[in-house]
Image (cartoon, one colour):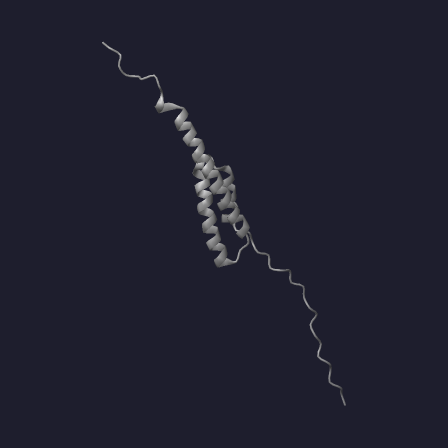
Amino acid sequence: MSRPQPATRAAPTYTPPATQRTSKMAIWSLVLSIITLGGAGSVAGIWLGFAARRKIAQTGERGQGLAIAGIIVGVVTLVFAIAYWAYIAMHTGGAGGSGGGGGGY
């Protein structure tokens, strides 16, 4: 009489944890906000930050903190850029005190 063979279990295989990618939109949001480019980079960084947050919520990518940092840094640098351009406009150019007209012929 033959004995039934015990069922052999397959050895557990190692599967590395799923690596989630960091959102490139979130990275670019922070980079553009830091560079600022006279205010244009700040606006682009803020916009990309909000877009990245929406995409991260849908796809589950990493980078939520980067997107928030991009928005915050973008707002701060945008305020500085507006103040800078206002200062430049007030102290140069069009508001000169020399008059400019009125030479008599």
